[in-house]
Amino acid sequence: MTSISVRQSTGMVTLFAFAAGLAVANIYYAQPLLSAIATEFRIGSGTATLIVTLTTIGYTAGLALLVPLGDMVSRRRLLVGLLLVVGVAQAVSAVVPSFAFLAVLSVPLAVCAVGAPILVSFAATLASTSDRGQVTGRVMTGVLLGVLLARTGGGLIAQVTGTWRSVYGVAAVLMVGLAVVLYRVLPEVAPIERIRYPALLRSVFAVVREEPALRLRCSYGFLCFASFSAFWTTLAFLLAQPPYSYGEGVIGLFGLAGAVGALAARPAGRLVDRNRERLTSGLLLGGIVLSWGVVAVQNGHSLAALLVGVLVLDLGVQGMQVTNLAVIYRTRPEARSRITMAYMTTYFLGGVAGSAAAGAAYPVAGWLGVCAVGGGLAVLALLIWGVEQVVQRGRTR
Image 1 (cartoon, one colour):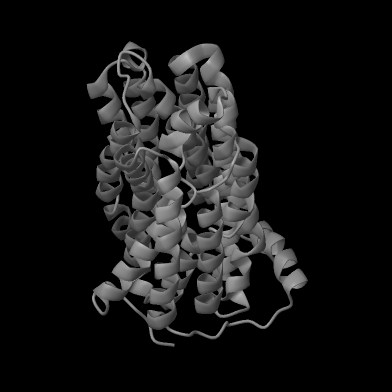
Image 2 (tube, helix red, strand yellow):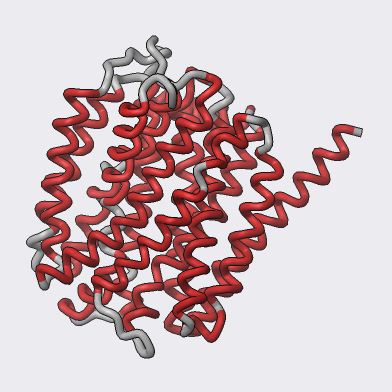
């Protein structure tokens, strides 16, 4: 099998990153639009956030049921098929007559919007051993940029066109175009193992049971993405109210600040390639905890503090994501899709928990309630890291 590396094929790695970002953006376009959707359908903020929660649930189901298929079928064909389904679902979302239709449709859309983790494991499989951390880091940077810039793009499109529905129409066109490009460019790689689908799903549990590093990194991923989702799920409501009173376009621009933080996290992959993942994890988790203290300044009414907090939060979360994936991809080359499924399913379950908790906290306790939820999750992740360091020191004595 021909491998790719950052030196051999920068263009191919860039394509993987770009495609992964576009694929994952589908489940985040709605976040800066929640206030506008709530206004059109005359629903409250708590009800509107159900779109985020349901989308995350659907995406988690897709991770569990579809991503493992990458170990038994052609990843190229799997990706193209899923992207085309998402394109159709986005087109229908643009013309739904009610919030109920939009919410229900968000589930199957999200189930099939799992192209990003499939692309990440595909890139890791093609990468050479010495460059796997860097390749994973670059592709994951594309994923988080897609997460963040989806908010920016969604907000700006809605602002320019005057309707949130146009965002879904644009997304549909992008997915069909991406499917065509990937079909023409991606290599056809035969799966390493031949295994039936039920056995494939059962084997995921065996992999998790046998790999302690995977279990630890799943814990970090759950808590970090829960913290991240708590912030981004409720930020639109904070910024839509005084003293900000921003429209969808300006709210979406906050994704640009997060994108800067995501780009700054790219060296994490190189550090993991040098076996510095423990120190890297501690620093990144500490940064996430610190970011919540910053965004809580003046009850969220300090624009400067919010911007700094976004930078640090996204730097920490993206850095942890790169570190986690680089560590777990060292194990089981024949099972990378299943490893991806186990990790990413746990990761997005964290997103469900964080979105739901923040959505419940905001109407009751406002922005400081959200900060308590997000900060508490980050502190728990840092405590787990601390316990792990004590255990590791005990083993080396």
